[in-house]
Image (cartoon, rainbow, N blue to C red; front, side, top):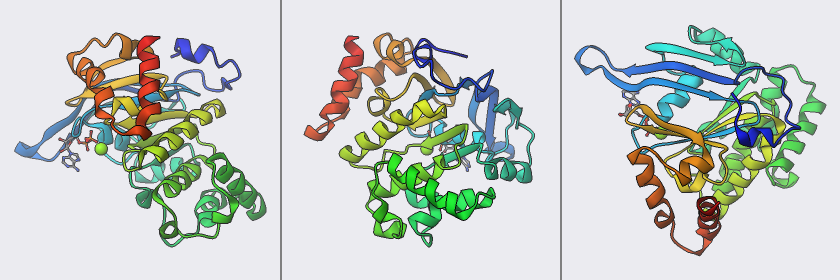
Length: 289
Ligand code: ADP
Ligand code: MG
């Protein structure tokens, strides 16, 4: 599945024929018996190499459930999920663990303290997934340094513990850790929601720079405005259903579903204060394109 925006990046390695993440007819239910409730219904979505898909929806719409399903953390009631062409729908705990150990799929959560071990230094956090894969220590340390640089952090943070970092620094370490194994797919669940606006802009900028590594990104947010300038495509989740999927530009300029129209019309006013100006400008630029 390609988009017009993907065509512009001709240097993107085209190692995967189909989408890196390929979800078809996905259904997830929570609870048992009479308490059983449908959290996701008939979700079909593909995310290609080098592509960022922004998954947008209000609280409770099922965004985190979709993330959990793609990470093997909730059972599927129906449908299939393929990662890198591999059908993972029926994977058990052990197979998922092996897939994660191979570093194929990684994640970043809203709270970086959930993605980082509080007792590991930045260096250990970054080298651990590589050492598990059998990468020699010296090479792992070198890669840790280069990924720290990629998220615009200085090497003198390597000896710090997560508790000794600012929220923005912590989230950038979590992004670096997710990327250090050079995964095919990274799912980021509200990665910038807990950050102040300056850090939000910086982290989104870093994610944009990472696109040409060929990684497929799912960027989850409840706020259309904050990911509009970063996502190639936007998928809108509403009450467990995907109501609209399209090129970011098209969804913002020509929202079709009423909920998307509401999101678009309220996005600029959601942001206040001078530090959010660049986000507003990015959105306006898209709106005027
Ligand atoms: P979002 O991330 O968009 O806020 P979630 O995926 O967390 O939404 O939740 C979607 C729906 O599923 C909500 O109605 C929520 O209450 C419900 N839900 C989420 N996790 C669980 C769970 N572990 N058990 C039962 N219901 C859940
Ligand atoms: Mg959530």
